[in-house]
Amino acid sequence: MQEEIYALKDQKSAQKVQQQELIKQLSVLKLQKDTAIAIASLEQMAEHNICPNTAQRAIRVLTQYQKIVECILAQS
Image (cartoon, rainbow, N blue to C red; front, side, top):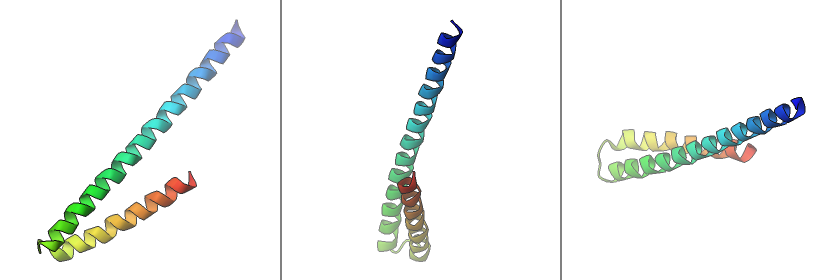
């Protein structure tokens, strides 16, 4: 009986870890999508001369951020 309880606890722990991993992956995908949208918006701002220097600086920062995230994901 005790072994069954331990087996159920282990199974529940494994499921919880899987759920957390899935949530993490979905969060990362959403962040990547949002970052891409922000970069596209900033590119449009720069093209229309709306704070072009600030927009270009933000584009560089977000592009660097994307590269870092991709490296981290590749290592996972």
